[in-house]
Length: 124
Image (cartoon, rainbow, N blue to C red; front, side, top):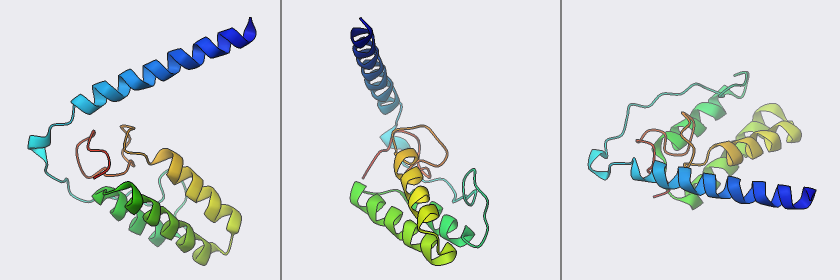
């Protein structure tokens, strides 16, 4: 009984996410392809110590957006920059994992990939 409940919940969540994606995707207006002014909040929801420059450089790339491959490269450069500034492998890997999970262009967050454009632009 418990397994079928969790299976049903997974199906409901999957359909909910698919529906949300379809609605969000239709909200994007290609005719309004105008990039917003660059803004950075530094290291989003984290302190900007000696590694603050890494976060601003990473934000600039996220603001611009681009392809999925470009995002992978940008995130790896961010991880390397964090390691050079902190000498902490744990902090650099944790930062990398967070940006990989939370920076997808499919979430309407102010730190998503391509946040300089209207929500719904995705990878280009």
